[in-house]
Length: 345
Image (cartoon, rainbow, N blue to C red; front, side):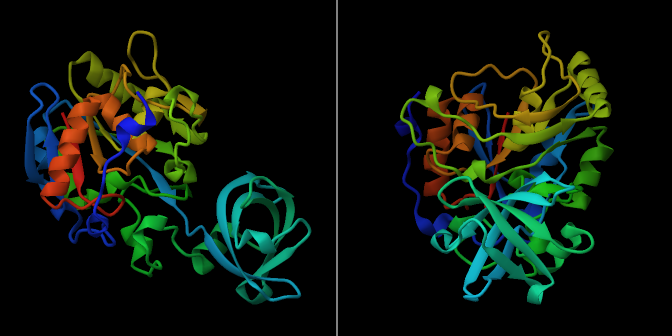
């Protein structure tokens, strides 16, 4: 497989700027791998594809308002600091991206919230990347929640609003740490989840904190030479027990999102069972790939040449996926984070 195998033209008007309301009213393309058939449904119809004894694996990561608008000391120049990950909690050290980067050098201080919180640049990491040390009183995440903006993907091309603080968050969100939402989960409402549970379906949570690597372009034609950004994940023992019991009882494992899929497939035993784990994964799945745990995949429509498109192509087959995407474009499905869903059986 080459990078160019995952290129397709997408009209800009099909990139969703706002989510469906209500959540489960989004369209859903159902792709059956066994006969390569394609059906058009609503996401609320997903209930009919579950059977008693199946399992739904969801990502409990929670997006935090990672965009901080600050001003540089002395010059008062406007600087955006995009928080990526906390490197050292005790020392208050973070990896960040700054914009405009040309104005930010080691030793510079950037002030936020009328000077009540500030950070000092202590290292350069990439052209726009910096390592900073914060100075503040209290709980930083509470401060961020008050002064930060939600990190909507760049392709949405609008500023986030207060509504995005809930709209760009799944109903499963519990563990703070992501700078991008596990968007397949955005289609679930509490009502819909309750209906699924009543069918005798177990819901098993994992955590994978999605970073900006999800949007980082692949820059090599030979996919074997691409290196994924590492992302932190946790698979608890309680989830392992649920998933493995369903596997042993011949039930189906429905995985909600490519992030949950990456976490599961990063922690499997030689006999095809799940094992408890926590740590960092840079797993990159592209065709051909043998999925060990995932039986059904709930996902969105992904960017051309993205690692997410490569993962779903590994699951369903590249040619089948590209045919489905062509049909989705023709029929006006909404793409990307706030867009419509795909269920791959």
